[in-house]
Image 1 (cartoon, rainbow, N blue to C red):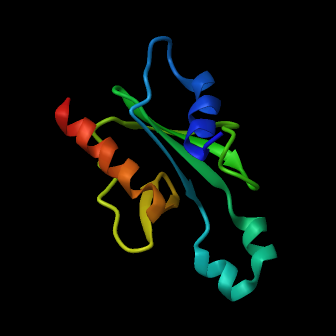
Image 2 (image 1 turned 90 degrees about the horizontal axis):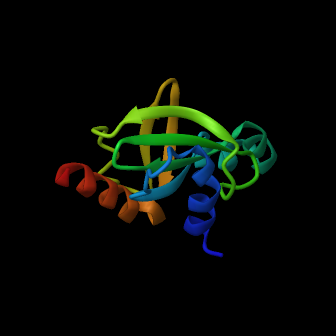
Length: 122
């Protein structure tokens, strides 16, 4: 199963009845430079993965744990649907959520664009 499909399936339990997913993408809390400077074990100890689930009504930020971004484990934050998530630039795009800076890798930039286009269309 593809990564986005796994994230979408695991996020289903956090959706309201009838709520549909417009976009889903992953992020991480720690900077990739932390792994380069301190080593992978420090990075793995400090990093948490997040899943962004974008619906017509809201943007959910879910915790996915320390190992993988495939399975949602709980709600971290709920943002208004009007929140702009992109545009992504560079290798990592930073989205502030509460007191966290969530880093989105460029492989998910097309999902950021889709989410923002859907928000503009509504």
